[in-house]
Length: 215
Image (cartoon, rainbow, N blue to C red; front, side, top):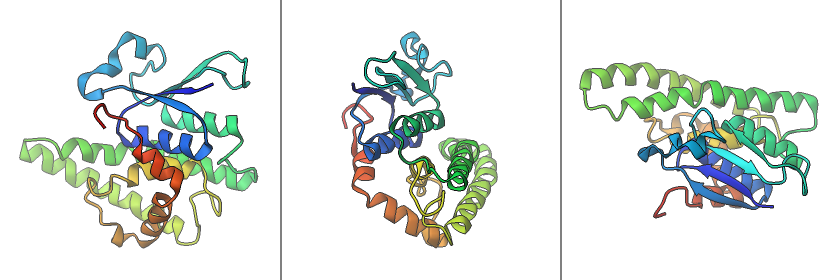
């Protein structure tokens, strides 16, 4: 049956649409307009108690057709769930699997919250508040790009030589590099990886799906 995706046009929403396309899973989008507070609606809180997008409902559950429905919130948990459900994009080799999980957690714990703060402060009208926040969080965001660049210097993907859910998680945030005030030419290995990711047909479809009303 069709997975129900509750999302908006954000990096965290995009990484799930990309993963669903790469995995070839049928899904239906339900736009949750976070600019209008729809994430606090009681019906959405039933599947995402932290009132954050994205979230999914899988009518079949992890057991497949005929199973009990399950809802999953938190984008990292969704990626792991989908990878385990399909048996794809989570390496079988134990060392590569550990690497995939490491870099997924790197994105969830750092390369998401830090550039997310850049998104916040860059929109402030008060110049003093904006300047302090941007200096602090842009410096950390730039450091994280450097961490990724070093990893990709001798690895095709974050988990090693095969693409994984870690790449889906990270590409959603590198997609916003211009908003982070980052020139990817300063991070050539990230640039190579990013161009390769964005050239993948399923990734293109994942970024092209309408996650805002009117798209």
